[in-house]
Image 1 (cartoon, rainbow, N blue to C red):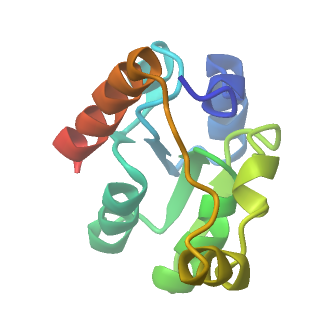
Image 2 (cartoon, helix red, strand yellow; image 1 turned 180 degrees about the vertical axis):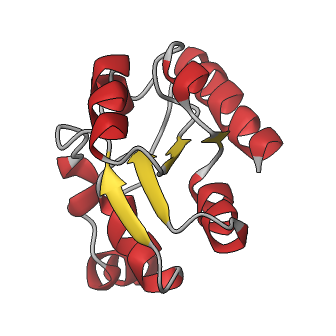
Length: 133
């Protein structure tokens, strides 16, 4: 369960849709259970990018971490993207840089050990994202 995705509410979606009535709503599967009912498409990050590339629509409301909008703007030219919620900002996702990841891999640092019970819950979320891709 991702606390950033859970900041996105149906109220946010309705407000965003009112501001951009012709836009398609894309959402990440880790959002709250009510959010998919209002989305036109539900999928992983990669699947949402592909959906936007292939869709006839030119405007999209993004129910995901706001950083996805930058990625969409780079990879899907000629279309417009708007956040469903400005509160869906993840500081943890902004910490790693390519340089810090390269350094960690070269020095074999920062081993991550995940307790079994947490890994089992996380695996379900990851499996679900792959199913939706």
